[in-house]
Image 1 (cartoon, rainbow, N blue to C red):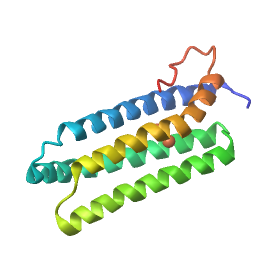
Image 2: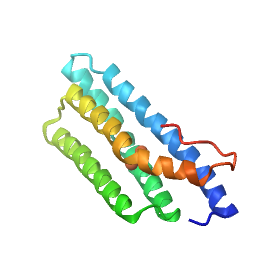
Image 3: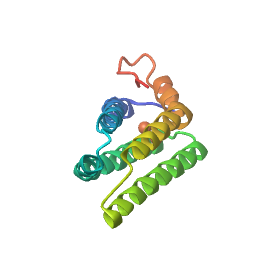
Image 4: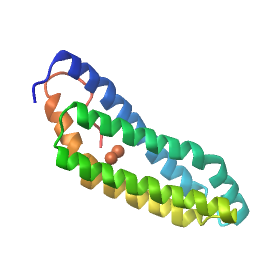
Length: 148
Ligand SMILES: [Fe+2]
Ligand SMILES: [Fe+2]
């Protein structure tokens, strides 16, 4: 992959954005567990209050990763596989939201555990691959490294 100044500058912004998004997603996971207090009403109110923004954050993050993988000509096979995982997670989160809307209740601890399990596994198996690739592409350019 030929790398020019325009792509370096694009990667510089992209890497920073992705690092920030990953931090926000981890913070959200921590916050989810902090709100598993054993009181159904409180947990449902919390879920209702935060789930919209959280779903947006997740979708925006996936889009950022996917666009940058395409722009940097990351392996198309890996990209397709990665995107499929993103879609499955969005679908699972949407199912939680729909179930909540239908029943006005959710199992917050189960949701928190699922999100944490998925995020950690996904970063290890999928994000790690493009992270190593981005870090190799920007080697020596002095820009921020991917953190996870
Ligand atoms: Fe990610
Ligand atoms: Fe990802």
